Amino acid sequence: MEVRSLKSILLTGGAGFIGSTMARHLLARPEVQQLVVLDLLTYAGRRDNLIGPDQDPRFHFVKGDINDLGLVTSLVEKFNCSGIMNLAAESSVDRSIEKPADFISTNVAGTSVLLEAARAARISFLQCSTDEVYGPTPFPKQFDETARIRPSSPYSASKTSADLMVQAAHTTYGQDVTIARCTNTYGPRQHLEKFIPTIIHHALRDLPVPIYGSGQQIRDWMHVDDCAKGLIAVFEKGFTRRAYNLGAKCERTNLGIVRTILKQLHKPESLLTHVQDRPGHDTRYAINPRLALIELDWRARIPFRSGFEAVIRELSQSLRPF
Ligand code: NAD
Image (cartoon, rainbow, N blue to C red; front, side, top):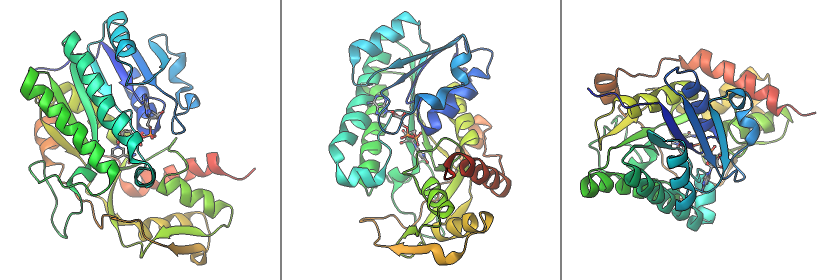
C-alpha cells in the first residue's frame, strides 16, 4: 500500500480541541518538515492551545478562514504542501440548532473550498468527520462504513454533506481523498461548552450539573490521542475515497459519565439536574471500527478507565475556580 507523505501538512482547525492534539502528534513525527495550522480562531479556537507546538521551528500559524480560496491556495503553494487535513468546523450540535447557516458556511462550503485548493495542487485530502452521520444506532447494532447515512441535527447534516462533497471530488475529478468518522472524543483543551468540561466546571463550583432528558443517551468514548493517531493513519494509509470509522467500542450512558466525574471529584449526585432534552437528540451512537484495524492496523489503545481519570484530573486543574 502506498503511504502518503507527511512532509508538509496544512492542518485546518488546529487551534481547536482535536486539532491542537493533532499538531502535537504530527510534530512528533520526524518526517514532518512543515506544519501549517490555518485557523480562524472562532469562539472555539484558542491560540494558547498551541503553546508548545509553536516553539517548534517546523510550525507555522496563520489566522484565516478555510472559505478564503486565495489564502488557502497561497499557503499550499508557499509551503509546498503534500496534503490538507481538515479539522476546521463548527462543532456544537446545540449551536447548529440555533444557527444552522454557520454550519453550512464552514462545514460544507469551507470543505468544498479546501477540496478545490487540493485539486489545483494535486495533493491528498483528509476529512475529519463524525459517527453522527449515521444517526441513532439501534441496540445492539454497530454501524460499519456501509451503513446508511441518516443525520439528525443540522451539525451532523452539514458533516454528512461535507463527506459527500469529499467523495464526489474523487468520483468527479479523481482526487485523492480519505474520510475519518470519529466517535465522541475526550481529552485536554476541549471547549467549556462541551459535555465533559461543562460537567466538571459546574461540579467544581457546586452548581447544578445539567443533563439532557433521562441521560440514558449512549455514546462511544475515545481518547483524543487515539483519535489523532487514527486520523494520521487514515491520511497515510487509507484507501482513496474510503471512509473509516474511528471508534473505541466503549459505550457509556451520559448519566454514567456524569456519575463517574462526580465520584472522582467527590461531589454529591444531588448536583445532577435533568433539563429539557435537545430536539432530535440521538439515543445511541455505536460504530464498528474493524475496517481501520484490518486496513490501517489502527485501534483505540488507551483504556477508558485510566484515560478518563487522567483527563478529569487535567481538566479539573484548568477549570478550577480561582
Ligand atoms: P473545535 O470546535 O474544538 O475546533 C474547531 C476549530 O476550527 C476551532 O479552532 C475553530 O477556530 C476552527 N474554525 C472554525 N471555523 C473555521 C473556519 N471557517 N476557518 C478556519 N478555522 C475555523 O472542534 P473539535 O472538537 O476539535 O472537532 C474537530 C473536528 O472533529 C471537527 O471536524 C468535528 O466535526 C470533528 N469531530 C469531533 C468530535 C469530538 O468529539 N470533539 C467527534 C467527531 C468528530
